[in-house]
Length: 372
Ligand SMILES: [Zn+2]
Image 1 (spheres, rainbow, N blue to C red):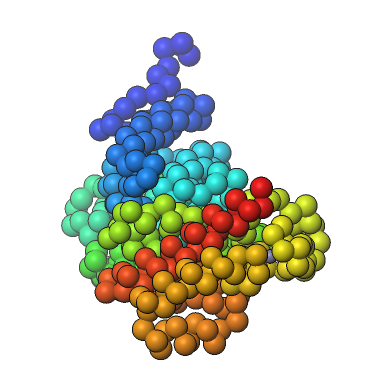
Image 2 (tube, rainbow, N blue to C red):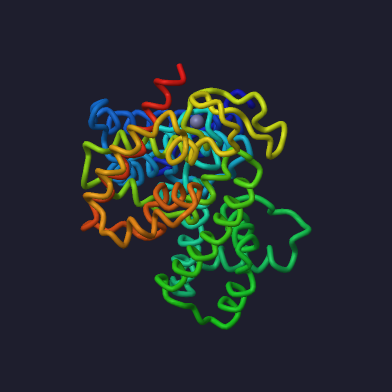
């Protein structure tokens, strides 16, 4: 009898499985298919002019993510399933930005403004819940969902702790929206789907941001990153790369600098073991505590090139901007430049972005070639 039992089937393209192992295999196939479309799009660029991270981002969320997450809001995903999806998601985010695969996973999504796969599935699951709740009361789908939702609310300690409605209930608990939904069900008054999506997305964004800030705090190498990237939104330098494809490589070098908190490729043996211990610069042998601002604005071995490059920056910048940058400390100036002037991207400032990314790129390349 057991040999006749069906272990997996597809309904409307959705894999339905009775075995976690079979479901895992199905998920792996979905991820592999999604990666194919990702790398097909990624190969459109060339090494000198790679495809812009903003364009890749649009293609990724329009094609790859729907392939990778189709129907996941209806499945019971294990922790290992979720980790598999998140790993693939982070790997593709690093590829898009040209980050090292050894850089901390927590720094990969925020500069692109991407949310996690878990958050994406959560939003989709709760959107589906509201779409069902907005159906007329004689709909069997609504009757089942209302009945299960009330059951979970009043009898959480007994059975039926699985299935799509249970997953929705858990998401509501995490977003502290259970009372809102129970109130709507018992009173028969529902906000519009648009308002509900706004509410869910704002709660999900808050949770994502809290998790991101907490996880960044675990890495000493992300001190500069947290000063430069303050929100989960598209980094201004990626927006600049969209209108100046020939500078995309320079922007990727800047992204690698903030993700690793260093310009020089040298590995500091003290890193991560001894707090606040300064190390020696490979170029001038000065004791330094901050590799990035030292190379960009202090190291005397690079002063000739720095002076030439800074002259180019002066030619493209208004005097007031130059004056305000000069008044900053080297560390503050580094954060100011790498963050895209602590403000949103402004298209009219393209010549300023060009001169500054060239400044950072040339100095970092020179520093690395001199240290070898
Ligand atoms: Zn130095």
